[in-house]
Length: 423
Image (tube, rainbow, N blue to C red; front, top):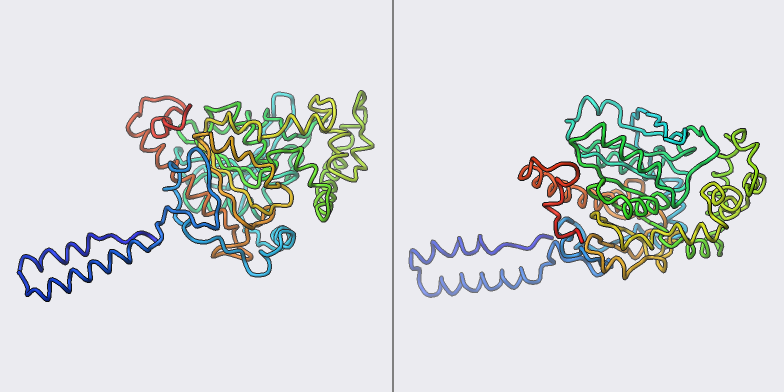
């Protein structure tokens, strides 16, 4: 609830004083003003976070004014939100998937690979060329058909944003044209996607949102390419892949491990002919018959990207090591009970020390769940509104800077508004 203003009260008192009412009337008015002041002081400040949320970061004070609902408690949907596995599974299988007419563009990469970019059909003609562009990076094996991606797409599009989903190689029915997929540390495709989108809309600010492995890739990208994106959001990021791998093989988590492994094996099977003659350290039979994501990565992924072992791959692909180098405004949202992106892997200290970062940790949420808020249980995740508050806040500042400094080139159009974010 927004803080009540005392201005209307003083306005009411002023004419009374001009007419010099009896002493009793003044006393009554003063008492009312005092009561109103007391009530106002007891009201929750709209920009004071509710204790149910853990909010830290070097940019905490700077970014908190962006949000309109963090003063409210995080209230998970009854029953569904009480168990992290129930919430994760329910969101995956039963959350509604909004309809959207998408137009696919296949982008050929420099190594003759391909990724699929799904744009909202008709937006090229409908939206102004300087409309902000939002690039969405789904999680491992995810794509533009996933419910959490669609909800974010619809939310942003309804606010006038141009949205494009970046489907990694083999994901979302994206074509595979070379014997290489993608990895947690590979940012080459992201670099080419951003360059391509930026060239198509040179007068627009570019933003990005990533989930899970897509979030890990996004943060790694931001640490190395600080001058291409105006702002970004990372959701349910595993951050420390060594810790995530440890937890992934424990207890009920083996269910998720098996599901993701089956999805990876299916992608490989659909393009098996490309991998038939792979020699060296490749172990295609191991990947094709993998019982875990770790086995798949050992047989294929780590070899494709030049790592000595799967442990070497995980330890050198952690976005927790990259967060300290991020120079782009970044919002990270995590759930304390996420079974796939464990809270103990969050780089709390580095986020606290980075003046460009803000972290919000919800007490519940599972993985890609966040079944809470006005649209629960079947509608958009609780995070979508928070994400758009943040992005629109950045866009507002970037537009003001652009209007004041129209001669500035490239992404520098936003740095005047956010100059104190850069270190």
